[in-house]
Length: 70
Image (cartoon, rainbow, N blue to C red; front, side, top):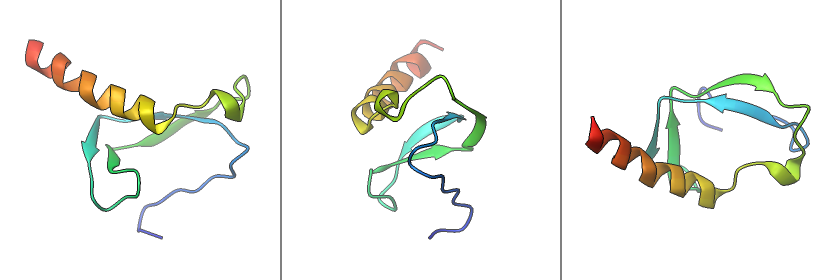
């Protein structure tokens, strides 16, 4: 496990805040969340409702459009 890695049981849904999504060859997903932090446990959400890697890719692409408008 990498330093500063936080693991949670797969049945616990958490909300994660982050500053930016970055490409990263270090992780199996190919992405890393910059300055990620768990903000709360989402007892109102089920495991079936979590974001997928496809959603992360979508958010990654959208952040560039947002930055271009600034």
